[in-house]
Image (cartoon, rainbow, N blue to C red; front, side, top):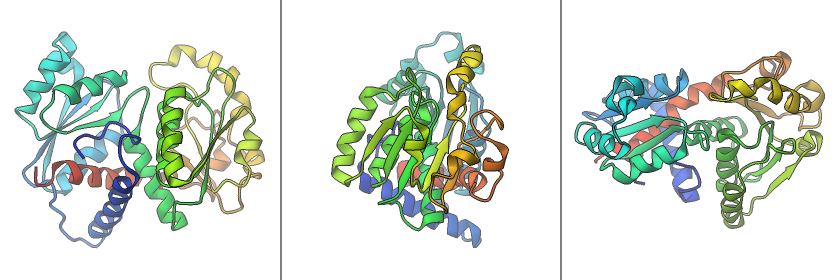
Length: 308
């Protein structure tokens, strides 16, 4: 594993190994055992989009594993003043042992990976959010005891980073995934096409519908995301109109399995994409999910930085 840019670029057994490592690392931390997998290593963290969970989990993860992390706001480095991605990547590669980037265009992390001599981690782009989905899969595994054979349902804007990475992640671990979105909000066709090839190997299925009730039938896991992501604030009014019928609420969730779990990457807008009685209800595991950002990302950092 050289970089971590998307879920789909990795073989299913690599992802399984990461999840196993994340469980082990979590148990070690909870029991007070040292796990210095990044001792002496430094992670550079570039943020063009603001963050709570991404910044804190990566920084704490590096510190708890014996390393260090440097926060780099894009406006505080020369990248924000027009220095090329190529030059920035090559310079930072001489200083740090790995780079995590949270940005807008996915091509930015691809260019960093092309020109960097150290591992690049995608902390979020407009197209993918792989580190979040690894935490989601870890949370499902903990609560359900397995992944293969389960059904995930995603309701909301299908053409966003969370949905894309969830499709790749679910099919990679043998879960079926059903997506419900209105017309004009369908997942990226290229991502879906490539993910289906993974599903053929893992014997898992992807389906799409404009009907949330059809998608959520007998779901083990229900997921949604905000209707307007960062950079889409100007579209908020139109998006609320287009997506109002795709709210995850108690009425919709009655069609899922009785023991379904609800996931949301946070931050959430209660009363919009999800009602308070769902996200704060007995089926919600969103705070376990948020905690697992730390443990899943430790496993990614270990895989990329240990012994490098």
